Amino acid sequence: MPPNRESVSASDAPAAIGPYVQAIKAGNLLFCSGQIGLDPRTGELAGRTAADQAGRCLENLAAICHAAGATLGNAVRLTVYITDMDSLESVNEVYGSFFESDPPARVTLGVAALPRGAKVEIDAVVALG
Image (cartoon, rainbow, N blue to C red):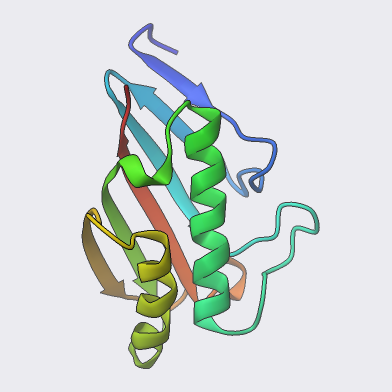
């Protein structure tokens, strides 16, 4: 890997399920790969609802941020991918509990399907330092 890029791995977040890393540090930014709601202990989706899975996505992202020496509160942008836009209100409730003040910028996209039948996937760009 080039010297200006460093991969980040968190043991308390699920391992990547494809040919990618959990995150890359580049300069003063951390680029977190999309997280679906996998429980890192069991490898299974955490909960049946989009809200349950969104909570697990954010917990996984928080663990990755921690491994990089940051917090999810340092996020500057998140992207939320959701398979059922009718679930967005409940996902927003969970999301809001992670960012009670000064939330990051965000994009939300409705998608046809996600890996492993997940209902939600979230990625993040986080400021370091």
